[in-house]
Image (cartoon, rainbow, N blue to C red; front, side):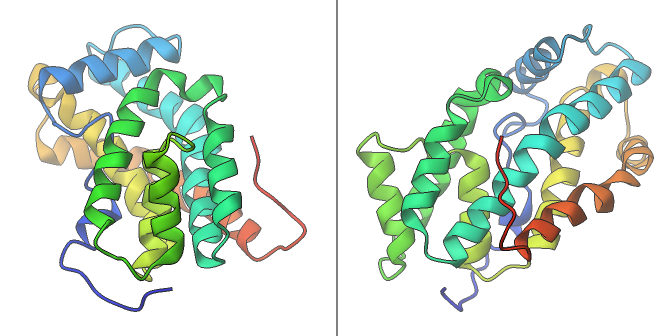
Length: 217
């Protein structure tokens, strides 16, 4: 594992997410609408409906899929398990719950991988890059996120917690103008969801220390 720092490392702890890459843009609004539809919810047109959406996304996508994917990618990268990482990447392609977000996930994940390409001495990273270039892997943003945490020796707990907070805040920002939400309003909404954040990440980290247990979907 590389022991180096990078001025972008703080940003990599959660400031990018495929569905909120351009906060407040038309693309962001469409992404939120797509996410809401995939969760069988009505349009987000009020603060209560926004909160229902955030709770649903957190419980149906973030906690069962995205956070475990980040943790598992981190684990494979830390153990230099290239084949296992690529196999897990291929496995995610068949997960129905993630299909509405697949294009955005690949786009952002592959863009981030390109930024990591200069790290020639990181063998797992370069092998994963080649697999993506050859069409053998997708480069999902969650896997690249976990890989990035490992590459820069960033704490996985901090990475998971930051990712979840930034993702939920990103959805809020996407509709903040329409719903006239201030940054204080967004933080207040986040506080209503935050009690579940430690509970969401601690069981995942527990898997990390149990050699007999494997995260799967």
